[in-house]
Image 1 (spheres, one colour):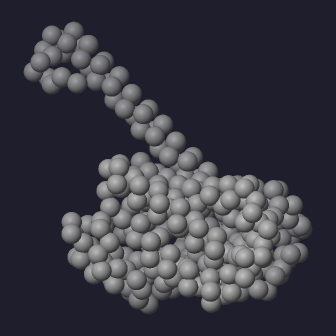
Image 2 (image 1 turned 90 degrees about the vertical axis):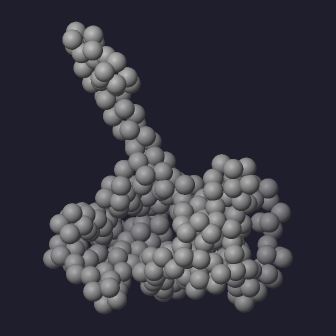
Image 3 (image 1 turned 90 degrees about the horizontal axis):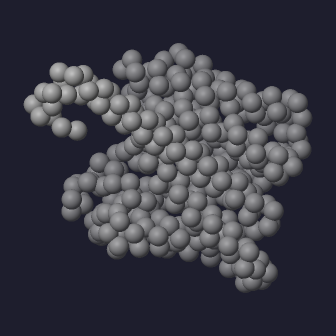
Length: 337
């Protein structure tokens, strides 16, 4: 668009104002389209990742969750490294100083992924999404005691509803599995610990990078690269090697295709979440993330033919609504502060 001084005749005839308005509407439509597209991509990749993991672990009866995590992270490292070499994205070099700073939080990251795999093997997708609400409860309590952060009454009310829905959902779960529930509770603690420690570690890590910054692509590469040797060690600790050696699944091309697809989806979540967050903001991102659990839960019940009852379905729906209320309450708290 030209400046005002160059458009005196257009200003006099009114054409410049119309052109500016038309350009403004065009950019607004473009922004809305970008936001919508990025939001749909984020929701699709997020839902697909959990459903594909459930499919691999349950429908294929693949009893090696650590190996699945390891392969997915390997695919992510391969893709991010290739994009970095080609100059499509920029990443920080993995120096020893950076690795030493990041290693403690990476242990939590790996534990978070593995326990998620273990719980998903035994629990249906809908109950996993409801039980994940415990993460919000633990995080809120951790923020209060560790960072002296105070939450509003609406936040605590939503957290209370989450606890009630999770307990009632577990009681009415027709496919209740104590092992799966135990792994999911551990996962909630690890996920909360990861979110509580990540910011502090990020600030320290930035000080030891060459550029003084640490973008999201560098964190994806750092987390996934450091997870490879740790995951390889855990495969031997949990004795998955014997299972991998005997299972016929690794001789099926279709199984490898699904495994590789899950690796692409894992990386797609990182990319689409960053894209969506850039196009909208933390407020919309958190709200859409909560709303995204509703179609995911329905899809999990329908696709995997989960036995359910009216009481259990009501508990699941109650928990999902509580998640949305929690996101709205956090948004309100953030706006007031």
